Image (cartoon, rainbow, N blue to C red):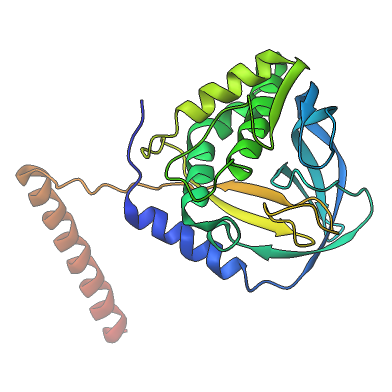
Length: 252
């Protein structure tokens, strides 16, 4: 069941994301793969003809110390297994408010499924990556609403594409309706080069790292009258005991 995330929580996440834009450049390299699948023959803007791309989570090493999971948000460039300099940005600044909202909702509703084990996790991660590429490379970024067809545009299926990935990605995109799921995430968007959803330019693949935003709920139980009287009596007894000990100390 979908639940609406309070605007205050979204605002806080936005502030955190904006502040990350001021962070110093970092060094990132891809160290391996996690959940995901090969797509079969898929058309992406990085190449003029279909290729059998990896679609799924990648493992990154940041500043030679922090190992994280990430999805590619740049189907125009390749990743690197050697350290490259990256800048930290936020979704709105790079993709605009509309696409940033689509991406955030995709994470809210479907990201958790990409972390499960086994064949289900592999399919979910592959579909999530495909859905992410489709959002970023929408046929007409000026058109209102989300476009989610894999039959045309810059991310396009072919006769040899694994259709199980396409079907699952279509389901994920279909959930994007402006009502967020129960999960909330904050993001680190690492960018290199100048493609950023605009075209193939010199640089390296850009990555999006998500961290779940935990919600803590505290409740205060009002004591019943009888319990309240007992509490007062106990506190009064402790006060008298402390006073007696203090008087005894003075007398000594």
